[in-house]
Image 1 (spheres, rainbow, N blue to C red):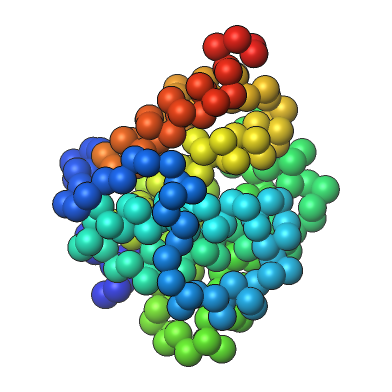
Image 2 (cartoon, rainbow, N blue to C red):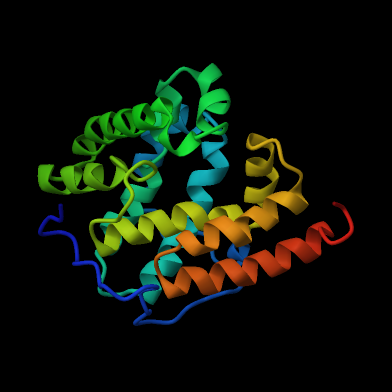
Length: 227
């Protein structure tokens, strides 16, 4: 369900961009500005779970690139939603994160639903204290709730958050972390990115960025030889 803060989701797939698409290494464009720093300060404990202190800032940087490609989206909503989307991992049973969240039919594991609920709880705790109005907070929660488990995006902003959440995996830092979560070596993990994750991307900008990152990461990690 969309709110007045969100843009309708175009039917075309992948969704074409309306702005520039930057496919350079993400290290060249860290997230800009300091306006979200007060929120970061409030979620430092939540950033220490499951590599969030690496995953969340990198995902935010990708989200800002996607917002540049889609200036029609609510940029602040996308940025705050990606910033907080995985904070709920800090409030679930940490011993179950890998065993349930990254094994078997992991997309439907109970713990993934739990971390979404807890992520919404975090958002409802920290955002009002920073002056964000109730309508905005609930729009953030509407994206967080289901970002891993819901089969479809409900708005353009929802789609950009989902794509940014996946794009970080294509950078060498994301590969280093996430390949271990899935008990895969980098070569086979990058194969998985190509065959499973790129088809999941919703926007053409994300597809372009993913392919460029994947090519660089494979070259850097020598995946053609180290497999």
